[in-house]
Image 1 (spheres, rainbow, N blue to C red):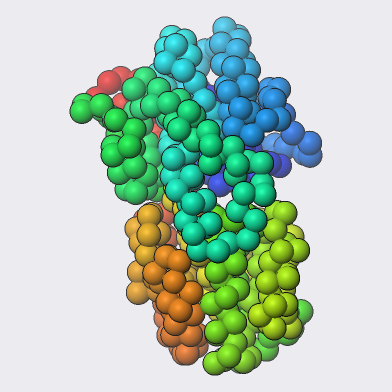
Image 2 (cartoon, rainbow, N blue to C red; image 1 turned 180 degrees about the vertical axis):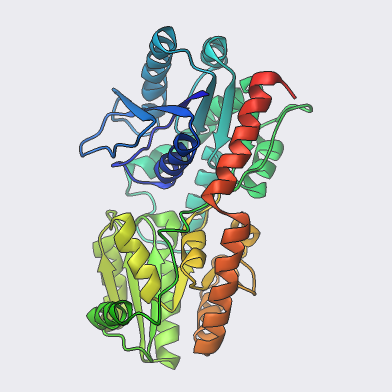
Length: 411
């Protein structure tokens, strides 16, 4: 089978879509299928994989409008590709590609279209409004956030086209499916299947506590952030953007430090909020307990998970969210919000849920989790098993191959 992936993100461009497309392409290629990824042009080296070809197309650097310009160029590249090397199925990764009904119809003349919905623009807007309501810094300082606030309704119509014109629609969570049904006028009869994205369980693995080298690295990395084996190291991973909730996390962490003074927080992620978050930490008098790391590579992030005691994920909106699964695969419990898709992955057996926007609830959840190292280890083991059973890359490949066959051959 020749599958063409249309994805606005692909390594070296990082993000949830880029990660999932990269891993799914690799899994399909390992099974003998051919994959062509059509993505946006970018700087940096694109990884090479046997059986995966990457084509890069131009795009206009305008917030949200890039999804339209990328979509136009991607459609042209798709038609040219099909003329030279026939495509069997098209896998479009929405909402970062915006096609009209007519453009979906053009694509469908090439091959059946499967549209993955990685969240929605209206959901993104809601997340930003919640972030503003709960006092996140610089909510409207980012041009992309401003565009989403005022233009989400307009760009939602392209998601409507994806819902109406795709052979199969694949939301990445039950929460995203509900969003599509309630706010996007999904057809009464549509082929829709939820497939949660999985993570690399060979990369994200628990700490090997019987390995002298692994334990030496464990102590070395924790020491870099002022943590010992007996203190508490809490990790937050995610882009430094308002809807990721880092401001609320810092306020909750200040309460944690007041009761568990030997606690340390490391926030890993790129973004323009680092200086503002650092000032918040200083104002809360917890700067000595908080460290910031820029964006790290997959292997470096995997190593950070392994040396943490707990991962905090306070995002106000996600289509699904991969960070909790990466943490669970690494044997680390997660505290996250009782909102959207997060409870579909996290519960009290693998971590804890706190009330969205409630700083006290977040602090209490963190304090409860770090109160026992033995319980943390037990929950970490349960989380690892859950990912292996329900959120693996192999499971993703099986599920999407079944969807592709259905799109090609009919229900």
